[in-house]
Length: 437
Image (cartoon, rainbow, N blue to C red; front, side, top):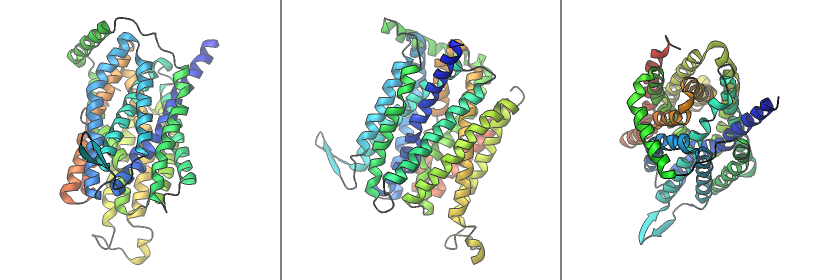
């Protein structure tokens, strides 16, 4: 009985990390600060979109390069919890610094003048890297806290709790900061996110146990390197994991691009900061519902069917978001006046966004639980490092191409084409798992 109680406490503590860090994704990356960076801090929206895509791409490269090494180091030396805490506070401190950036500022560092957009991008990238590393090491606890009978529910519960955190932080931002009349108030949202992360990550740090770090760090670094090399050489013996990681490489890249440019693209369609906040609230409600319900659905129908369902809905949702701006008399499709009130770019984007919100949580949660199901117990941290690697190794391509296509065609609608292509490739590769899962 005592072990059962301790395990429930550990599950709650582990789930609280999703509750704690989700506002960073929701408010900083996806909806508010990204839009603020592109439209307010940058010279213009096209340049801002290109710079934002560069910051997201750099994050992906750094995380993909270091995650396997740090994962193996955690396996070898028991440093997982320490790296988790360090990554979290790197994100928190950098997010606080984002508060101090205002339009048309210029800074001098080593007698080199740097614009506010460049410096803000550097600080955001550091915060984003800390956030991503924290997620990697938190994910690696899942296989210890669950079994094949409840892994879907536990993973789905954590994602759902995360979206509750995102929803509450959005609601607080709406109540506390008047961003519709004063865009400068967007800066205070950075402080809210940092405070939220610092407070609600404490249960994770206090109640998740880890083996004590061993001495002889040099030996552990060597062991980590040889373990990584061994895993690369023998990865073909884990064919299911390899197939899954290839599929996830594409569809996760599509999701990364959506998260990075969701608020930016909404601004392109004509959403104000206030409307983006409302959009964020609706999307988080749908994401929360999706995470809780699909966690149970996964355990009933199987993880393959559940993930396949989310991929198709995400594909058609992004296609609808791409087509939405065409339903404008000034662009392509001019509907009769009676229809324009119900079929117009904003309404269509609302529908697409709500469906994306409903499916993003189950997709990520199901991917995480499938990885835990397939991963050997002795390699959980290292393989979750490769899980992050597969998600990040090429994930710089989506955001980078989004920025390049936006700059080339002068519209963010062109950039969204890469998301459609990546979802389609993910679906094709994921189908190869149908006969074995």
